[in-house]
Image 1: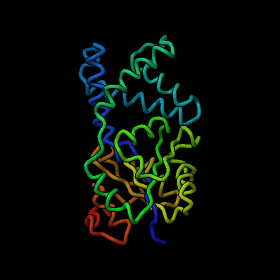
Image 2 (image 1 turned 60 degrees about the vertical axis):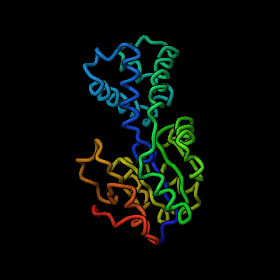
Image 3 (image 1 turned 90 degrees about the vertical axis):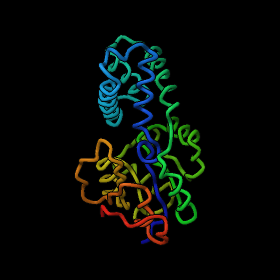
Image 4 (image 1 turned 180 degrees about the vertical axis):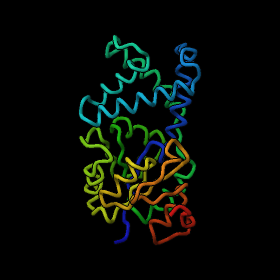
Length: 244
């Protein structure tokens, strides 16, 4: 069957999360007078991401809710378990202010969305919350490009579980065989979408997963300019992927 819709991951797929996170954390630690305690902004960010992954795993397992994992990220990062919910939330929101100041789309996003606007339907599936991603997409000016925005916090199931991808297909009223999924993580996005029966596309932007051997199933691309060739029909936008 032909691909009729594309479902997108957001962070580090459409939105340059890594850069925004790095620059936001650097600015936040400077403003809070905490940078020296971590040696460098890079070391601080490594620690922040480790904690984020740990706390997200707790959320994905149903051990805590979305807001609690966010507050616990702050407590663990600061080494201050005694922080009240209000104190932890306030600290996190001050970080968010700096983080949002660095928000941007990758430069290959708008060209491919424009090129596929008339030929394919589009939706979002993210391992985050609707509150976070809905606002992000609006600020970045692309919210109206998507028929549906689905997030793990509201779905009650997160990628790579098949149920998350199938929920996106249900929202579009399409079978998985007619839907492509584009994401930046080879396992969470790539293998998860492939196992659920979607056309799985791993966008490898040279980040933390760049040295990972791709699992069986996903098509690997280095730029979204390669996506139209994988979707079929009009291929004027880009050459076939060199990673296939």
